[in-house]
Amino acid sequence: MKQVNIHEAKTHLSRLVEAASKGESFVIAKAGKPLVRVVPVAEPVVDVSKRIGFLKGSGIGEAWDSLDHAALDKEIEALFLGEPVPDAQMDDEERRG
Image (cartoon, rainbow, N blue to C red):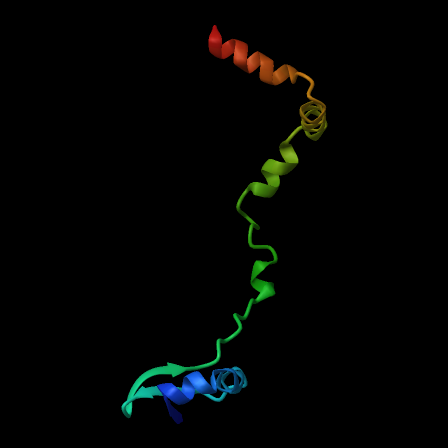
């Protein structure tokens, strides 16, 4: 592995970083004593096959299917339009009473 002193590393930093990004690791030394090793950053490997179906069997799909989507759509539309949401008003009244 290539070793460079601090002065050389400062002078040729761009060139050394470019070389390291291509897989050529090097060590920066001070007075001949190694201080740090510069290595390329490995790209994280994302295994997409593990992400597909990761919620299977968790019950979330069944919970989603059991929702009253028509009522939710009306509630969301009312919220966007700034209109009162009947179910939310009932809950507030129940909390007060």
